[in-house]
Amino acid sequence: MARRALASVCLAVASGAAALACAVTAHATAITQVISPVSLVLGSGGAREVATLDGKPVLYCGLAPFDEWAAPLLGQPVRSSNDAGMTVSVDAHDVSLAGLMVRSGWLQPPELDDDAQAAMTEGRGGWACASVVTPFELLHTSVDPKVLAGIALNESAYNGRAWPWTLNVAGRGFFFRTREDAYGAMRALIAAGRSDFDVGIMQINWRYHHQRFASPWDALSPATNVRVAEAILNENFQSTRSVAKAIAYYHSANPAPGSAYLARFVRHLNQINAGL
Image 1: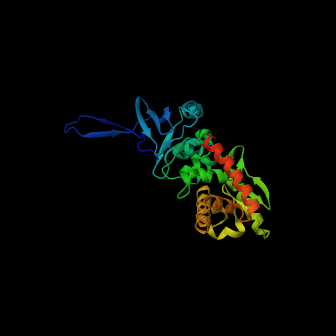
Image 2: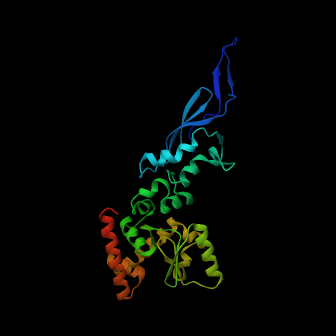
Image 3: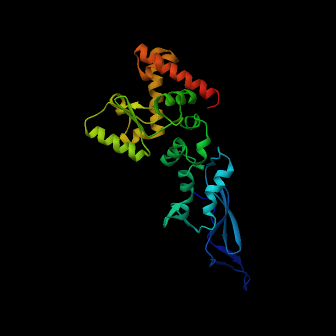
């Protein structure tokens, strides 16, 4: 939400007792300059004011790609509301400017809501150039982000990135474009009586762990999926007292597939440590 937005221009006038009169300008308020994902200049008539958005800029790709993306915002009229803060028109609908920045991958809000998690894990906007570990640095609570990233690359790698909208059905991987698409496939599987599938960025098995989620939709949330993966890994460590076994058992307690899984994890971890 914008901390300040130019909605009117107040003029001090002298009339007898030197009262103040506030005259709303007849000119529409518009974006005259986009300084960064959190700072822009609004203009109304001859007045100018800097407005700021809550959050952090996502500029892993540098400022130039953001400037190119933001160019169509110049001259856009803006409005202000209590619910959405500053809004701009997109396809004839008023949308939150901060929300647009978040969904497009240029703004990290104070709380990583569903839109922010989707932009970050899909690699939209400035997130496209972030390290593969970055999402896990922001989402983890108890397990080393590099460990989570290495496991996620074992589980849901797609074009070099751990992809959040992934299902694996009886050993066959499916990568969906959106969370909604993956959710639709999950509902169809469950309606057909199937539970032999893994879900989400960390590929949690639905048959054995569905009770850890509030719903199939919740299971696809990257933050929730990561938290459940952390719980499983911590439980594995508590029972084995071995980090290696905790990771191997994430896939299988059977020595052969577990060892092969651990070997793939180590290769991914070495790539991560080399700067992937």
